[in-house]
Image 1 (cartoon, rainbow, N blue to C red):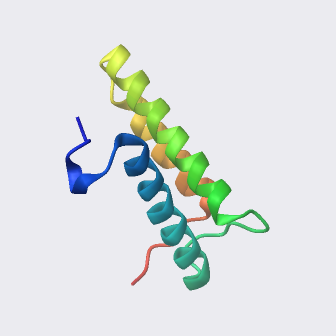
Image 2 (image 1 turned 30 degrees about the vertical axis):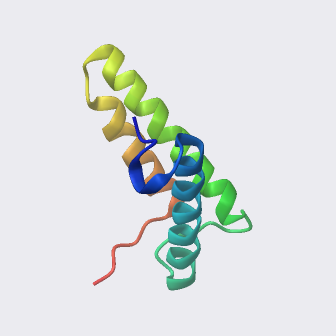
Length: 85
């Protein structure tokens, strides 16, 4: 399905997505938006991607969007998310 997207194969698309997530986590931590403590941005990005995939799967299986809301709330708490002003 995504094989034509920017000429990337699905595996390449996933790799690019993970690189983008790592950059977002790193920048957010540097700005003080996230508190990742001594964790590597790569590990935090993988946890977020895995949680989002799991929530989407459960949401589709059950037809209930609560899984996505629960994961979103949990990751905001986990990261110590602080909105910028």
